[in-house]
Length: 153
Image 1 (cartoon, helix red, strand yellow):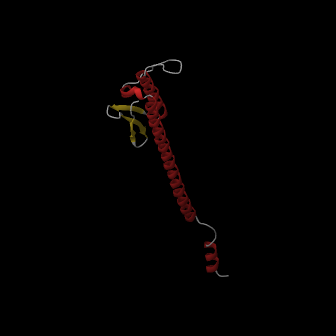
Image 2: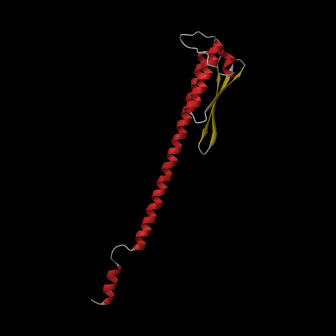
Image 3: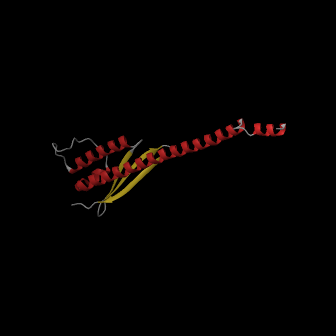
């Protein structure tokens, strides 16, 4: 064998340092991309969870208003713990204030920076605007709002 063939054969053996480093860089970039996608997926699922909770909370207040139609304008006021329950009889206005107090407490517990408000507009039929606002990481304040028209009995 001549020297040229021996040198060419030695040059073709295995990976060199440069090829290994290039492969490592390519794999690293791919792993960073996968981690970024995973992080975005977690953020999107958190946002979806908060939006679902906001919809459920707004629907809960709409159901409370429908059950206590005579509460009327008291739902648009300030909530207060009236200790209303099965053992304690309350007027419709007291029950509305108690419902509002319970509901705003739950909104604050279930959503980060959560605030729930109800506005009452005297019309035929009366209309209630229910708003749930919370703080979303990287986005800021998000508000879910529904309007419910509930005729008096």
